[in-house]
Length: 204
Image (tube, rainbow, N blue to C red; front, side, top):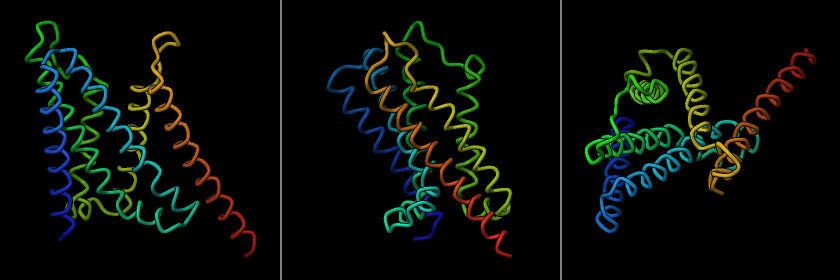
């Protein structure tokens, strides 16, 4: 299977599986706005976890160099594409919520941060195909995806963090801890690279 075919398979499968899961849940509990909001929360959390996997794939390989970290790095692009598919299905839920709610109106102009997130996801998705990545060039592709990854990391971490001690659920603290650990992994890998580069230059 070619890379492009894998990309399409993973992307469409993520949307299809998510859509089926959402439909099954709503068929069982009802299509009230409260139940849609529950799905939106869990959909965002699932997307967050996939994003964290993509975020730590390379630094984990640099730090540990284990077979499983190498496999994680090899599949990082597919993880990112699955994340894009899952969050596309999440957008479908948002649109569905607008249809069933009299009070909720979905406009990108009213939520610029959300519009930015989806713009970044779309740009990174489109440039994950062979033809577009070659068109960008390796250096530009790396800059684009690194910057995009950090934008998504900040946006999703802000979305899942507890906003107050009184209203925070344990899942929010768990997800925040995962984000902090992921960031520390990247910082540690970067520090190790800098130290290794310094030692290498000092021996010449």
